[in-house]
Structures are given as C-alpha cells and as structure tokens.
Image 1 (cartoon, one colour):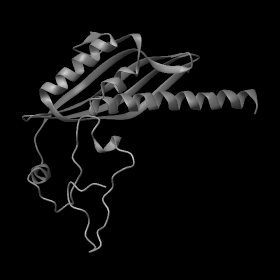
Image 2 (image 1 turned 30 degrees about the vertical axis):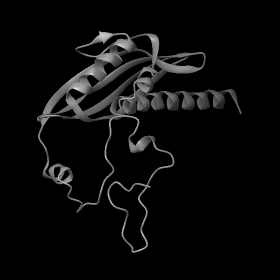
Image 3 (image 1 turned 120 degrees about the horizontal axis):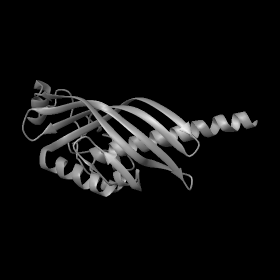
Length: 193
C-alpha cells in the first residue's frame, strides 16, 4: 500500500468513526441511555445547546430531565454531514431533525445543525466542543394513524412497543422478530420472538 493509499484509508476510518459517534449520540438520547450519550464527549468538552451551556455531565442531566418531564417518544434524525479532518482534530456540520411526542399536544418538530469540534485522543474520537443551532421549531398534532395504533387497531400489523430506555427492542440480541405459527398466522402483539 502506498503512503497516499494509507492516508486515504485512515481518512475513511476516521470519518466512519466520527459518523458512528454521532449515531450513538442520537440513539443514546432517544433511548435515554445516559452512558451512551456521555461517552460521546471528552470530560473537558462544552456543549452550547441553545438554551443550555455546560459540561457533558450537566448537559446529560439537563437533557434527560427535559425528556422525562415532557416527552413520551423522541427521534433524532441525522442528515447532511460535512466533515473536515485536520490530523487529530475534526470539524463538522451535521443537520438534524428532532421530533418529540409530548404527553400533551402540540408535539415538537425541530430542525437545526450540530456544529462540532472533535478530537482524537489516544486513538479515540469524541466531541471536544459543540454548538447546536436550532433553526426552526414547529408544533405538530396527532395523525389519525397514531390514534388507531394507540387504540389497538392492528390493520397495519402489530408493532413492537417503542420504549425510551435500554429495554427497547433495538437493544435485544438476538433480534426478537415475530415468527409464523403453524396455522399460517403471525405471532400476536406482545409475542415477540
């Protein structure tokens, strides 16, 4: 392998490690997995999160208190991601979409960007500093399909429950997919696995 190819390969590895870090951050928030979110930051990082500025521990306490108080379900979607690598430092802009189902409508739909400075220390990439740019927030109302789902309507098929913690189906290994029964029917709701 030539030196140029080695640099290119390292560039790809670094980019994938940082992207995986961002995905863990989103999953950790949505599943309320404190350790997963906290592990994305260096101890001396600062998160400037619009109405909050503080350390990683302070951010996690602030975010999880807000989720517990108002959100039943939430989704962080990561979209466009532009990353500049500079040795052991990297800077990125990542577009996000945040949707939260509140205990009472209206629900929250927010779009914005994470502006991040990452550092690689001892071979590990983590967030060194972050600014969250919230560009717009909207209120949402329930869709009729959501009301059907909550009423137990299974015309679209039973779905596993969405749980905002580590008991969510996404953590279970092996994955508990429904299996066909001998009579050709599928296992009933709640019979996952």
